[in-house]
Length: 151
Image (cartoon, rainbow, N blue to C red; front, side):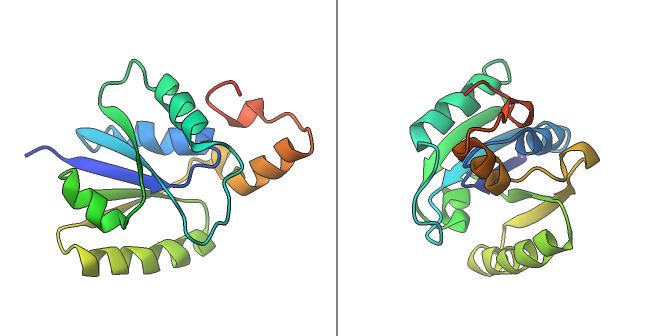
Protein backbone atom coordinates (compact mmCIF):
# COMPACT_ATOMS: atom_id res chain seq x y z
CA UNK A 1 0.00 0.00 0.00
CA UNK A 2 1.36 3.38 -0.97
CA UNK A 3 1.92 5.94 1.76
CA UNK A 4 0.22 9.09 0.49
CA UNK A 5 0.30 12.31 2.47
CA UNK A 6 -1.53 15.58 2.03
CA UNK A 7 0.20 18.80 2.98
CA UNK A 8 -2.80 21.11 3.44
CA UNK A 9 -2.72 24.88 3.69
CA UNK A 10 -3.81 28.11 2.08
CA UNK A 11 -0.26 28.72 0.82
CA UNK A 12 -0.83 32.44 0.35
CA UNK A 13 2.01 32.45 -0.64
CA UNK A 14 3.88 29.14 -0.79
CA UNK A 15 7.28 29.72 0.82
CA UNK A 16 10.70 28.07 1.01
CA UNK A 17 9.62 26.80 4.43
CA UNK A 18 6.70 24.95 2.82
CA UNK A 19 9.02 23.62 0.13
CA UNK A 20 11.43 22.33 2.79
CA UNK A 21 8.60 20.41 4.49
CA UNK A 22 7.52 18.83 1.19
CA UNK A 23 11.03 17.76 0.22
CA UNK A 24 11.67 16.24 3.64
CA UNK A 25 8.28 14.49 3.49
CA UNK A 26 9.39 12.66 0.37
CA UNK A 27 11.85 10.76 2.58
CA UNK A 28 8.86 9.37 4.49
CA UNK A 29 6.00 9.12 1.97
CA UNK A 30 5.61 7.69 -1.53
CA UNK A 31 3.57 10.69 -2.68
CA UNK A 32 2.89 14.14 -1.28
CA UNK A 33 -0.18 16.09 -2.36
CA UNK A 34 0.02 19.81 -1.74
CA UNK A 35 -3.59 20.64 -0.97
CA UNK A 36 -4.51 24.28 -1.36
CA UNK A 37 -7.64 24.68 0.67
CA UNK A 38 -10.01 27.57 1.03
CA UNK A 39 -9.71 28.75 4.62
CA UNK A 40 -13.11 29.99 5.81
CA UNK A 41 -11.46 32.14 8.50
CA UNK A 42 -9.51 34.11 5.89
CA UNK A 43 -11.68 36.53 3.95
CA UNK A 44 -9.72 36.96 0.73
CA UNK A 45 -6.54 35.58 -0.70
CA UNK A 46 -3.72 38.00 -1.39
CA UNK A 47 -2.23 35.92 -4.21
CA UNK A 48 -4.59 34.47 -6.81
CA UNK A 49 -5.10 30.76 -6.22
CA UNK A 50 -4.49 29.88 -9.91
CA UNK A 51 -1.21 31.78 -9.78
CA UNK A 52 -0.14 29.83 -6.69
CA UNK A 53 -1.06 26.50 -8.31
CA UNK A 54 1.00 27.41 -11.35
CA UNK A 55 3.98 28.57 -9.29
CA UNK A 56 3.93 25.52 -7.00
CA UNK A 57 3.59 23.12 -9.93
CA UNK A 58 6.58 24.80 -11.59
CA UNK A 59 8.70 24.04 -8.50
CA UNK A 60 7.91 20.32 -8.75
CA UNK A 61 7.82 19.86 -12.53
CA UNK A 62 10.64 17.30 -12.23
CA UNK A 63 9.33 15.68 -9.03
CA UNK A 64 6.57 13.27 -10.08
CA UNK A 65 5.84 12.21 -6.50
CA UNK A 66 4.46 15.68 -5.72
CA UNK A 67 1.20 17.03 -7.06
CA UNK A 68 -1.02 19.99 -6.33
CA UNK A 69 -4.76 20.13 -5.87
CA UNK A 70 -7.24 22.80 -4.84
CA UNK A 71 -10.13 21.85 -2.61
CA UNK A 72 -13.06 23.44 -0.83
CA UNK A 73 -14.14 20.83 1.70
CA UNK A 74 -12.87 19.26 4.89
CA UNK A 75 -9.28 18.08 4.74
CA UNK A 76 -10.35 14.76 6.26
CA UNK A 77 -12.81 14.28 3.38
CA UNK A 78 -10.33 15.15 0.64
CA UNK A 79 -7.85 12.76 2.24
CA UNK A 80 -10.29 9.88 1.88
CA UNK A 81 -10.96 10.78 -1.75
CA UNK A 82 -7.25 10.65 -2.57
CA UNK A 83 -6.43 7.56 -0.44
CA UNK A 84 -4.15 9.65 1.77
CA UNK A 85 -3.81 8.31 5.30
CA UNK A 86 -1.39 11.00 6.42
CA UNK A 87 -1.39 14.75 6.83
CA UNK A 88 1.91 16.58 7.00
CA UNK A 89 2.21 19.78 8.99
CA UNK A 90 5.22 21.95 9.66
CA UNK A 91 5.77 23.39 13.13
CA UNK A 92 7.81 26.55 13.67
CA UNK A 93 7.10 26.98 17.38
CA UNK A 94 4.91 25.94 20.30
CA UNK A 95 2.11 28.24 19.14
CA UNK A 96 1.95 26.30 15.88
CA UNK A 97 1.87 23.05 17.85
CA UNK A 98 -1.11 24.12 19.99
CA UNK A 99 -3.09 25.15 16.91
CA UNK A 100 -2.12 22.14 14.81
CA UNK A 101 -2.69 19.64 17.62
CA UNK A 102 -6.32 20.73 17.96
CA UNK A 103 -6.89 20.40 14.22
CA UNK A 104 -5.15 17.02 14.23
CA UNK A 105 -7.51 15.71 16.89
CA UNK A 106 -10.58 16.81 14.92
CA UNK A 107 -9.25 15.33 11.68
CA UNK A 108 -8.67 12.03 13.47
CA UNK A 109 -12.23 12.15 14.85
CA UNK A 110 -13.61 12.75 11.34
CA UNK A 111 -11.39 10.14 9.69
CA UNK A 112 -10.00 7.51 12.07
CA UNK A 113 -7.52 6.32 9.42
CA UNK A 114 -5.90 9.76 9.14
CA UNK A 115 -2.63 10.28 10.98
CA UNK A 116 -1.02 13.70 11.27
CA UNK A 117 2.76 13.85 11.08
CA UNK A 118 4.47 16.97 12.41
CA UNK A 119 7.82 18.04 11.03
CA UNK A 120 9.81 20.69 12.84
CA UNK A 121 10.71 23.53 10.51
CA UNK A 122 14.37 23.70 9.54
CA UNK A 123 16.04 26.53 11.51
CA UNK A 124 16.78 28.71 8.48
CA UNK A 125 13.03 28.82 7.65
CA UNK A 126 11.57 29.17 11.16
CA UNK A 127 11.05 32.93 10.87
CA UNK A 128 9.26 32.73 7.51
CA UNK A 129 5.49 32.99 7.54
CA UNK A 130 3.08 33.62 4.69
CA UNK A 131 1.54 36.46 6.69
CA UNK A 132 4.85 38.31 6.96
CA UNK A 133 5.70 37.65 3.30
CA UNK A 134 2.33 39.12 2.24
CA UNK A 135 2.93 42.26 4.27
CA UNK A 136 6.43 42.78 2.92
CA UNK A 137 5.18 42.23 -0.65
CA UNK A 138 2.14 44.49 -0.16
CA UNK A 139 4.40 47.42 0.70
CA UNK A 140 6.88 46.82 -2.08
CA UNK A 141 9.54 44.86 -0.23
CA UNK A 142 11.64 42.22 -1.92
CA UNK A 143 10.44 38.72 -0.99
CA UNK A 144 12.26 36.59 -3.59
CA UNK A 145 14.69 35.20 -0.99
CA UNK A 146 11.76 33.56 0.80
CA UNK A 147 10.01 31.95 -2.20
CA UNK A 148 11.08 28.90 -4.24
CA UNK A 149 9.84 30.53 -7.49
CA UNK A 150 9.79 33.95 -9.15
CA UNK A 151 6.70 36.10 -8.73
